[in-house]
Length: 82
Image (cartoon, rainbow, N blue to C red; front, side, top):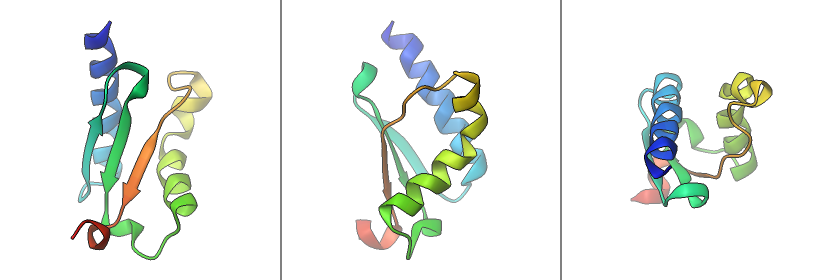
C-alpha cells in the first residue's frame, strides 16, 4: 500500500513541477500523513491562503474527478528558507 501512495504522491509532485517548473517540490511523511512541500519564488508576497489557492487551482480537475480528495501543503518562498 505504501508503494501505491508514494507513486500517487510522485504523480502529484511531477504534475506540480510541470506547473511550477522553478520550484523545489518534495513530500514528507508516509501514508495519509504525507505533506507536499513547495518552495517557489511565485509565493513571494503572497499569504499562505493565496499560495494554497494558487497550488490547488492547478489541481482543480483532479479534485473534481475524485483522483485527489485531500492534500496537505507546506508552501514557502525562497526567502523564508534562507
